[in-house]
Length: 209
Image 1 (cartoon, rainbow, N blue to C red):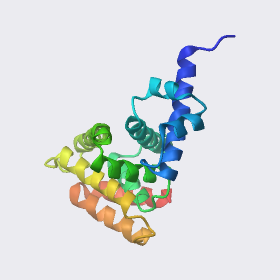
Image 2 (tube, rainbow, N blue to C red; image 1 turned 120 degrees about the vertical axis):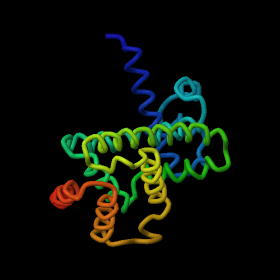
Image 3 (cartoon, helix red, strand yellow; image 1 turned 180 degrees about the vertical axis):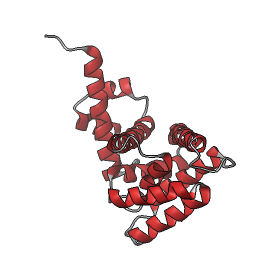
């Protein structure tokens, strides 16, 4: 039975993304060569360029895939959770960033400061994340969870600042008690919306732990 071209291409792309994530996390963006990623994925340089136009594009694509997987897992674990509850869970997980995605974020942020080839795809990536967050916030406003006067774009930006900052200020640089951090997040959410929703989410997040 012959190979299905679309399936083979999807598998090759997946191998490249995994190999890129590992290589960038281990050796950094500048220390990683395209040939290293292609070899680790078991493909030629030409095959890599058939899927990704540059090393910069591959870096941001690997970062985006990790982010989408995390969100998909969170939705699958509790599809009925409210938006504010989801934001609280995401916020609590920021406290301990030790996965490969954390290293990818750092590499992408640093590289984007000095390399326009990375900055362009990173702007698109950040815009995608901001739009996703703003969409969630609009849903929360419609459901009465958040103050109607809140700007979805400004709150999405605030969430992005927390997420990116947590990748840079890791627990080995500065640590905080998990319960104190969770209590702070609940206070922040309380200032943004309904006290009744906050009380419910406090009970749910406590149970989830």
